[in-house]
Image (cartoon, rainbow, N blue to C red):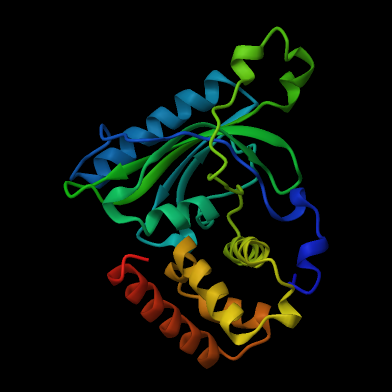
Length: 248
């Protein structure tokens, strides 16, 4: 999938709009990662069995973002152990100890099925996120009962949050690219060099370059050489640092 027709593709194909409050959450702080993962595996089983077959619970380990899923129960999202981080997780993983949790927000599967989700980050003693515990509930089946279940279906509002539940890193990078292109508001074929540097800067801000294969994947999508991507990334980071120092 390339970006040639990016601006003409539908929202359910590329971008899943979510609404969520960004809330501070500091209760999942631990130095014993394996014990935490073991406990969460047990919790995931209980949560998935509480709402079968409409719920799944996923555990991510950020040591390898391309294969971050280390456990999944319920699996309504079609993902599997060894799958990669979502776009939301990539963006938040880069935020260090400022990462925030998200509750009761809207997500979509790649096939357009409507979900609502919670994402809670696991933190070390320094507050840095090293993993995440995610719960996803299929609410499509309840749509016909929305009046009776109005409170159940109510979503918090925060238009800044976006996530697609995919474990395919190439697809996730592709979605991030399309979001960045749409933010700039210019078709890729007519983008200037400055626009492309801006595009790379936006991808960097979203956390795309935390993925080891990001440069070759992005280079292929944009039809540019890897060296050009590295060059643009260097320029983008220099500009970002200069803007920060100047208070821009």
